[in-house]
Amino acid sequence: MFIIDRFEGDWAVIEYQNKTFNIPRELLPGGSQEGDVLTVEISLNKKATEERRDRIQGLMDDLFN
Image 1 (cartoon, rainbow, N blue to C red):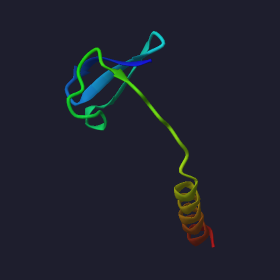
Image 2 (image 1 turned 45 degrees about the vertical axis):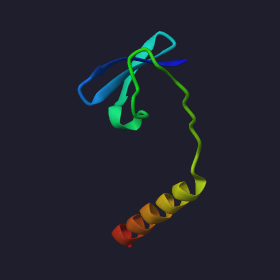
Image 3 (image 1 turned 180 degrees about the vertical axis):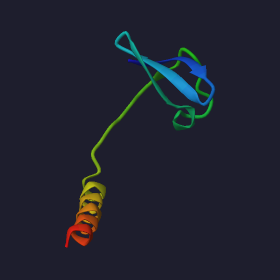
Image 4 (image 1 turned 60 degrees about the vertical axis):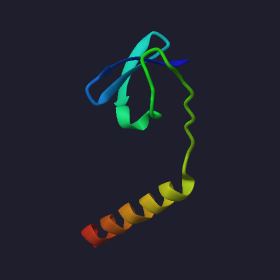
């Protein structure tokens, strides 16, 4: 479970498996409060990844050719 432990300015301190980490408060749903449990979904955006790789490869080709 991801639990909002507290807020520190613009950051939310999140507890997960006895560890804490910070995320920008603006990423949380409006009305989030200390003690709320968060559902987190992470997925890969393969199209954006490929576009980024292509852009970086183009920059490297320009730089080294």
